[in-house]
Image (cartoon, rainbow, N blue to C red; front, side):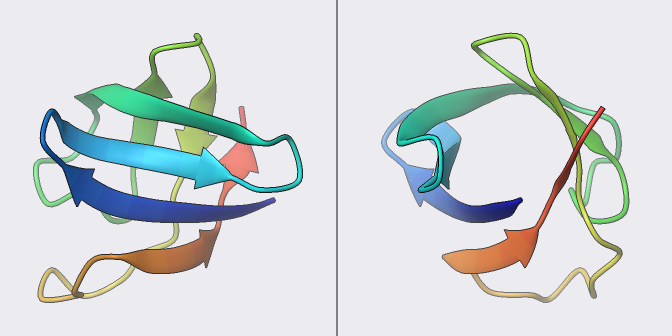
Length: 66
């Protein structure tokens, strides 16, 4: 699913337009974010693609729900 990741006042947040859901990220598997799994406040685990650490936000990526 397409997910837009951005920095907000509370940290990282993810917006999924197909579900019309925007939730903050509460935990990340990898410190640099990319290539790991993130936990979203609503309980979803999303696997993010492996991108360079220097990738700028906001960005839309293909995330897989675990």
